Length: 148
Image 1: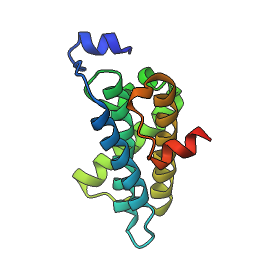
Image 2: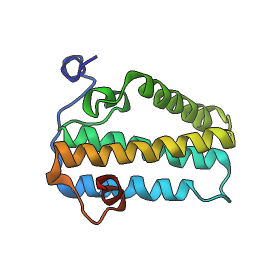
Image 3: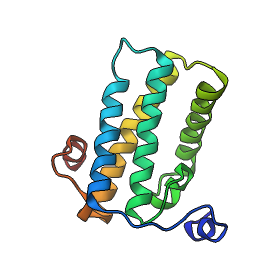
């Protein structure tokens, strides 16, 4: 489904953003990735925090493109392959099960979610650099790392 179809069926609303909002979201995603790496944290909490960073990264792409958020838009905004979106969507479903059904994440699932969040945030910062440089916050360490 393309962005225009999502707008047409009223699933996606256009909404302008600003640099401060993008900077806040990037910083929050980076904080959540760092928090997810704390080894003393249980796997389910780690998974939840890492997935939150994935949502924030996806939100950056939509907001920078002028839309309100849905994570399934990443193939259309960031251009990630459908196969990668399937993995991220499985994490979304796992997080739902964690939050609403009391299921727990394994250490392996938590580690996988942290790696996915880190990779997505790097991809988002590179995408911002190329497509929306007006939103870059040059103090952000992910932007510095992804530019190298």
